[in-house]
Structure formats: structure tokens, C-alpha cells
Amino acid sequence: MREVTRRLRGVPTSDGAGVRMTRVIGTPQLDSFDPFLLLDEFRSDDPNDYIAGFPDHPHRGFETVTYMLAGRMKHGDNQGNTGLLGPGSVQWMTAGRGIVHSEFPQQVEGLMWGFQLWVNLPARDKMTVPRYQDIQGDRIPETMLADGVRARVIAGQLGGVTGAVTGVATEPVYYDLHIERGRSYSVPLPDEHNAFIYVYTGSAVAGAGSTPLQRGELALLSHGEAVQVAAGAEDCRLILVAGRPLNEPIARYGPFVMNTSEEIYKAFEDYRAGRL
Image 1: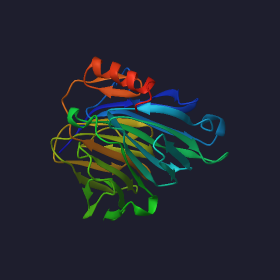
Image 2: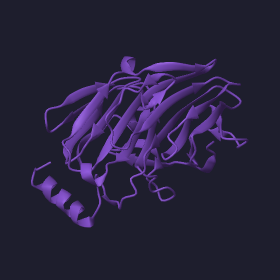
Image 3: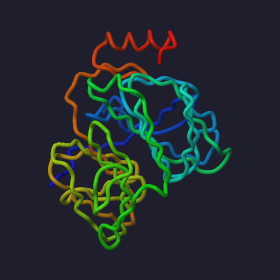
């Protein structure tokens, strides 16, 4: 069974044109957690915190995963792709060899809440053709794992259902777990995957006898075939994410993640020359 090896909180930051958020992975205290490069939670009902959105910006060499809990966000790119993310929806974007895109709120008031996760690509796939998996909320399978324990399965297999996202190199697991007070469940995980839990509502206990994780806490997990999760003193909601580590060198600067500094220089050259 897996246990908590480290727990931490994110730090306030801003990105895009001033969107305020909490960065949990991608900080001085946790630069990365192979294959995960970044985890942000954005949550505000003040439009001044999100209305400016994310104007055109490039990516190369990794994948971005946006999971919306509330609010509406529209995206578009330099290849003519567009899409609208609403409550409960997911976008898994493989930037690959390069893309320039934007993301803008489609609301002027109300709650905007969700996550963005960056997932590294192996060296062999960093220059692959970009692609999107845009999945609306009603297409994400849900399963009752036990009395009082429910899961939305974004990626991976759980409770007899297969996640909506497929064909990703790091073979990810991404579950949104809803656990009622007094309930628990042992969630199976691929033993070789690195895994973390992030509690976004209520409190939860992970592993044997650990201090409850409070809202806004991230827990890194040891390796093992499963992790026991339980609600704390109240109902809880959390994301459980795991992926196969790449164990490759990382060269990272801004929106580009490659394996060498020379590849980073080439990414900037290609961007300036309009080749993304």
C-alpha cells in the first residue's frame, strides 16, 4: 500500500495576462514530479482575477491538461482549432512540435474554478504532431466505487470503466474522487507510476494513520499497488493523479520543455520564425 511521503501547499502566483492562481507543482519547493511539470489551481468568483485570460502563447515538448470544475473557457490556436470548456470538461492538449494558442473566459462574472496540469513527453514524442482531446463533462465516465465513494475517470481504468482520455505516452491516471464523511476506498494504481493527491474540498486521509490532508494540500505518495483514501471530518473531493516517470533530462524555459539547452534555443528560433 502507498503512503504519504511528503505534503505541501502551493504558492500564489499569476500567469497569462494576470490570471491569479495557486501553483502547487512548479515551485521552488517542488520543481517537478516526473512526469508532472506543473499543477495550478485557479479558483475565484472575482472576474478581476481571471477576465484577462491567456492571450496567444507558444508551447513545445509537453502536454497541458485543463480540468474545469466551474466556469467556461474558450480556446483557439494558430492552426484554426477552437473549443469551449464548460463545467466538468477536460482538454488534454499534446503540444508536441509546437503550437501557439490562447484561452479566454466566456463569462464576466461568477466562479471560475479548475486545474491545469503539465505532463512531460518522452524525447521520442517531443516533436510529434500536436493534437487535442476535448471532452465535455457528460462524456467523462463516472462510477460508484463503494457506498459513499464516487469517481469521475478522466484517464486510466477504475471501477470497471475506462477514462475518456486515451493514447498518452506516460499512461496517466487522473481520477476525481468524491468521498462522503466516514467512507473510504482502496484505489488501485500502477506500481511503477509516480502519484499524488490534491484535496480541493473538505479533508482526506491517505495511507495508514496519517494526519488529514486539508483543502489545498498536495500529498506525494510512495510506490505500491494501491492507496487507501478516506474522508476526514467532512465530505471531501480530491484529484488522484499518477503517471509513468520518464527518467530523462529536462531542459525547461518558459513555455518550452525539451531534453537539451540546444533544443530550447531551437524552439525559440522556430517560434520567432513562425514555424510553430
